[in-house]
Structures are given as structure tokens and as C-alpha cells.
Image (tube, rainbow, N blue to C red; front, top):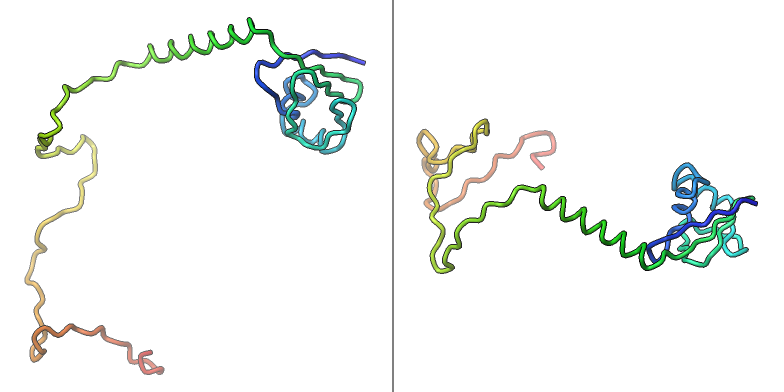
Length: 159
């Protein structure tokens, strides 16, 4: 029987991911398939849940492979957290500093001039009055009356 010890720095790890990380499955989906087939035992009991939460102290067995899940010691957890913080600081330092506009007073509106189109931008919709005369009422129509839509004069009488 081949024994593997795996240390986790989190509260738990999903069973299919544990099988993938330990090299017993090619992917998380393949690990889930192994679990669904009934080939996996957790603490000596057959396990059918693909995403069963495996916590430190539990033992997972797949055939002759045995995985013991251990908790990481405090120094490992602290080192991992410091490395994560350092990566975040490096990423923040790599970003260009945002240009801050001078603070505007809250009681004055921002001046809005004519907005210019960006180079290569498509022209927007044209606004303003439409060319040509505005259609008026039909001759002989009552003032204030609305025009009705014409109906088709087909075999059904238009309806």
C-alpha cells in the first residue's frame, strides 16, 4: 500500500480536487468520476459525494493508494499569507498611479463644454429638426381629431 501525506493550508479540500492534486486523477472531473464509480473510501467508508469536504485528520483511500490529510503548521500558513500579500503589493506597484483631479466643491456643478468625439469614433445620431414640411391634418378633418390607421381590405374585412 502506497501512502501519501498531503498538507492543506485551508479549512478543507474537496475530494475530487484532492485526488487531482495528489496525482491519482488526471483532472477534477476524472476524480469526480472515480468517486461516482464507488472506488473511493473516506475514513474506511465508501464515499459517493464528489465534492465531499476533506478536513485535516481524515484518510482517503483509492485502491492501494492511501492519502492522509494533515493540517499545515502555523509557520507554513503565515509564510503563505506573507507571500500572497507581497504579490499583491508588487501588482499594485506595477500599476500606473491614477491621476487625481483637484477636488471640486460640492456646491458648484462641473463645467461641461462641448464634448469632442474620440479619434476613429463613429458619428452619433443626428439631432435637430427634420427637413421638409410637417404633415398637417387632412383637408376636411375636424380640429383636434386623431388620424386612424388604414386597415387592409382583404377577404376577412380588415380584421
